[in-house]
Length: 446
Image (cartoon, rainbow, N blue to C red; front, side, top):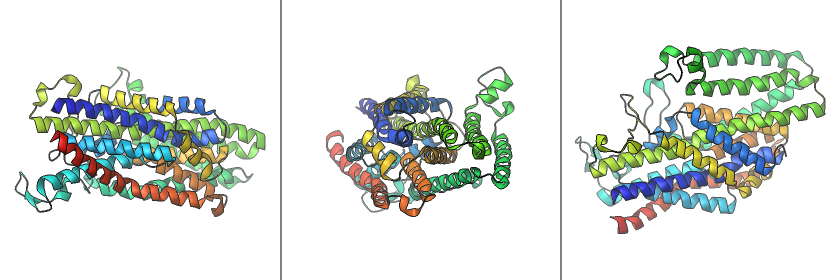
């Protein structure tokens, strides 16, 4: 029964990843479709390709965070199954209603809600003794807050909840600043150009300082030192950041010399770069959440069935990250997750495209570049910090930010308030739904 349940969870997790793709396709393609740079079909092909390309760019930091949402030593496979089922139900409902809610928060809310329901069912509301002799309560089963290592950012569900607010704010602030910078660059004055040159130098210096060189690479991909450094996944991510910023910087330097037609043509080409960058961030951020769920399911299967790690088939040989740095994930898991989300993106989600691309604020090529660039940089930054943020919240905040550069009334706040309600309700509703599903499943699965 345990192995069968594990296979069902893996299949449903990949189905969720597929649904996540077409639910969140709007995040990456809404602005590029709204500005008619690409047709809807071309846009989903473009986004799906870069969703999958993220497989070679990002690590497993976000997957680690999601896998540790609940203590895998204290839950069973029914908990994970209930969390995935509730997440799928909420995603399908919000897709049907055309609401761009967060697939990330749906998954985490479902996982946490089912874990809490399990703790209450097993231990009740009173305290109980753990294996190490300490007293725990039902709410301790969820990793609410964990201090970061060596001054790093803390993790846990509380941090994820905090980024419900912080991710769109970061996106809005970044897109607002990028818009102001580009608008200033359109004027024939020297100060914007000096600022742009300083930004170019700062970007090159910063990216160089973040690079991992050959002697620090654990498993070089090539014999050549140069190509090993170039294709190291950590370095690729920072090269992309540099490419995005430097591309806009070059445009900013020549913006004032272009006429309206030339500027619009250049911005439409740049939108291809910005939408590709955002699709990379979307694939890297969201696929890792499903990897984390699958990894947690394997860990729980090993724990609850007394299976020896060495007796597992190679395709299930998963080791969750530990303090000693040990970590293992078979290649098929990330490959399957990136494939599923790319296939889902190909299916599109046109109701949400309409909300994101036109109902929040009118989007031009200029604003599309600013919003997508800001969204991509925010996703790269949060992925670097191992925080599973919502791509939906991030791009919505970015679109609002560019709208604010025109005037406050340019943003349709009625639509925005409705989105905020959906964001606030996603985690608690998913958690409650998962708890109900858990109790129903427990009647049949024990």
